[in-house]
Amino acid sequence: MDSNFLDMILFEDALSITLDTARLFGVEEVPYLQSVGRVLSADLFTDISMPPFDKSAMDGYACRKADLNLKLRVIESIRAGIEPEKEIGVGECSQIMTGAIVPKGADTVIMVEQTKTVEQGRILFTGKKTSSNICYLGEDVNKGDLILERGTLLSPKHIPLLATIGVVIVPVYKQARVGVIATGTELVEPDQKPGVSQIRNSNASQMMIQLSKLGLEPQYFGIAPDDEEQTYEQLSKALQTTDVLILSGGVSMGEFDFVPSVLTRLGMELKYQRIAVQPGKPTTFAVGNDKYVFALPGNPVSAFVQFEIMVKPFLLKCMGHDWNPPVWKLPAGKKFLRKKTERMSWIPVKMTEEGKVIPLDYHGSAHIFSLNQAQGFIYFKIGQAQIDEGELVHVRPI
Image 1 (cartoon, rainbow, N blue to C red):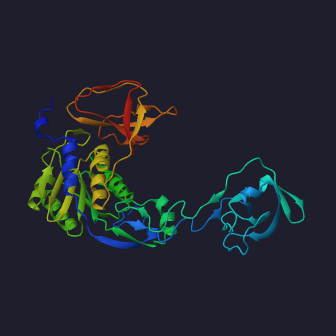
Image 2 (image 1 turned 180 degrees about the horizontal axis):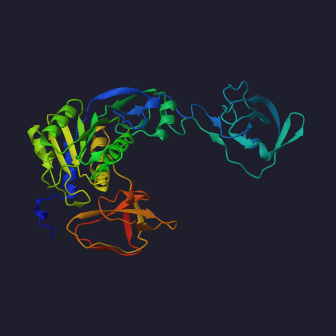
Image 3 (image 1 turned 45 degrees about the horizontal axis):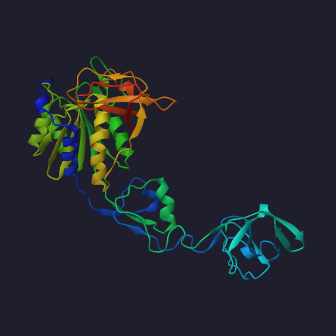
């Protein structure tokens, strides 16, 4: 067993602690075309019924179903957006276009394809039977119906709904101000060529994009070197203009891993420092002075995974949305094995054309190239050593 196992907190407990500390940052209004990625702060109701009138579902002729065996006299042509002028009587019909108002007296629209002209101004139904082909008033929703609930995370599919009900200014929760810092003297920015004992800073770019996908506009505060005083100054400055600060590196047990002690100096309470999860054991979460800090491990796969499983649900809750991550339940395409079982383990996987799950070549939390083909992650529970071929596994897509 891991000698430090007793110092670790279960992932489920860490997530619960994290989400329990989340808070809202107020409300505001945004134009509906800029609302994707935001969370509704109020229920939205429709001010109209849909359809707002009985409308034709297709091009054809509006008539009485009882008259389908008669030669029908065409009395007018009704286009979408034009109100009918005449009522349908016995033996009569009106030519009608898709979306147009069905005239009074008509209870059926017959398709053009099921008619033929038998003489000037008269048509005959040639089908054997027909449905009404009418979309009725309020068939979809009635005026006053609840359309979107408070807490809905808006996506492109919601924009036509907002347009339809006339909500062009949308009430949403404010977003947290989020900052990113990478730590480590060995780091250089991606546009620089690393020297001896240096590597390019990939974590900050990764986290900035992960944040952007949530609709956030993060601030980047650069690289903090392995110096306690400089780290203190850099974090202190960043916390002045952010609500949530996300760090990578500086949280393991090394001589130069200063982040936990710096957070304590800044007046923050360390809620947890070690999680029984792989990758990402030294993930640290601190709260204080109405601020939040996630200090993620420096290894890139650890930082990526911990953002997805811990930081993302927290930020969405701060935005007013209780997020349930999508999960695919698929069969394992081969046997998965692991030796150490003291921690929950997340493994990058991809799906075959047959819909089966297979592991990717994965050398551990520093193996960033394992994410290249990853379509998701599966997890081993604590104590679980293998997953058999054909066994259903839960895949969390990325």
